[in-house]
Length: 343
Ligand SMILES: [Zn+2]
Image (cartoon, rainbow, N blue to C red):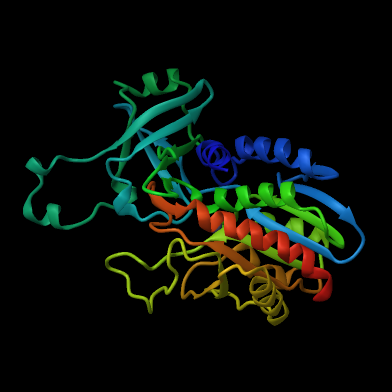
């Protein structure tokens, strides 16, 4: 699974530019399902089995990134954010700008400490004040490199192994969900009904792809597969997030815009117990997932989010545990198997 995670995470695809991840998803899901389609906005919809119930497992293919906003005369590239970045971590990052002539490496520069006055060194820079240096000497150089307004920009953050089964990388949110989809499709054998494996677009821009895909699939239930906010690190209290790394997949009970459907909660809780998969729970003040919005699609589709613990979410150094992914896959396979008793 590690190699597939590396493939998925390092695919250069952000919200609205999901092509490279979509290619992997289509290729892999074709091996394990009966039919794979890509809809008009780019959602990948794979079907396995037939009849009722109709279960939809969804993971978003996009991740947060940046976009070229303006190129100045001196050849510095100004950018806007796509998705929820903490501005403070953008300064001094290495990025790739995806122009018409292929990816171009750039760095987000800043004024050195030597030249900052007292006030400056105390305040953190805003993304609006930042710029990308690709080594160009002029606007014409940038143009020559194939870069223009609207090109998408990705953050560098290759997947690497830490101690034990823990790994780090940028964009575990939500390539871990994509990996869980593929692995579940691969291992799924005995179940009743139809399973749809859906890779959604533009989740980070406002839960976009989940609406159209839920509408077209018209399932009985949606389970969104995503990552969550682990709280086991210095500076965070258990009451902020009781979720711990390496302690199993997590059921999101509440987020900023929705609360889990009671039937889904029962289904996941009881199935986890039977399958002997340790389940964690999280109540979130902020954030949302693809599951938050499906109750508003058609007549309302019940949903919940099953998430894998991750530290430092939305930074280039997210940390997760392969064991948590493994247990999430195990639970998903069991959930599909038991779904006909609940929906
Ligand atoms: Zn996510």
